[in-house]
Length: 113
Image (cartoon, rainbow, N blue to C red):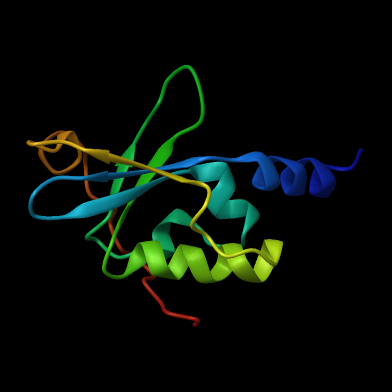
């Protein structure tokens, strides 16, 4: 199986988490999934966050108003499926995303869609 087939299979089987608090929300996306649909982490805005994971793949927390939709457009273009059924919603009274994770630098921030 080629690397491209493995990425495609993994995208077909992935479940994303959408974390939200009373004020905002973020789509949790593994870096590999973002790269698989053609978006580098530095292409997201500085309103999204990055979580380095030492024993696995790094995670991105994509801001709901802009970056999550940007990723969703690329996911649909790559897989032919809308992003939606693959999302598990998680509500937190106090978000661990905003308070504990570093923001993405937003260097090279561009919109291609």
